[in-house]
Image (tube, one colour):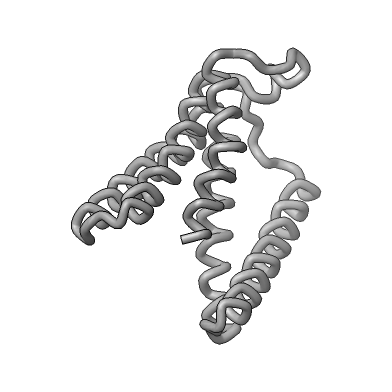
Length: 159
C-alpha cells in the first residue's frame, strides 16, 4: 500500500507540474527551443501522469478486481497514447535531425548498451531486495526489451 502512495505522490510532484507548465506555456525562455512544440509535449506528460491515478486509486480504494483490471487496462492505453504523442510531437515541429555520422552511431550504440546493462542490474537488484529473485538471464532479456522500446521511442521522437 505504501508503494501506491509513494508512486502517486512522486508522479504528482514531477509529471503533473511539468505537464501543466508545458501546456500553459509557462517555461523558461531558455528551454523553449529545446522543448518545442510545447503543448503536445505537455499533453503527452499529462497522459503519462494519468497512469498513476488510474493504477493507484482503485487499489487504494480496495475496489473489486474487475474495476482494478479495467482501470489498469485504461492506464495502459493512456500510457501508449501518451508515449506515441510524445514521440511524434517533434515531427510536427520539423526540427528533428537524423543520426548520420559514425561518431553519433557509435554514441548511440554505447548508449543502448549502457542503458541495457543498467536496467538489467536494477531489475536483478530489485528482485533480490524484494525477495523475488529472477535469474540474471531473465533480467537481461527484460532489460533488452525495455531498452529497445526506449530507444525506438527516442528514435521516433528525433525523426
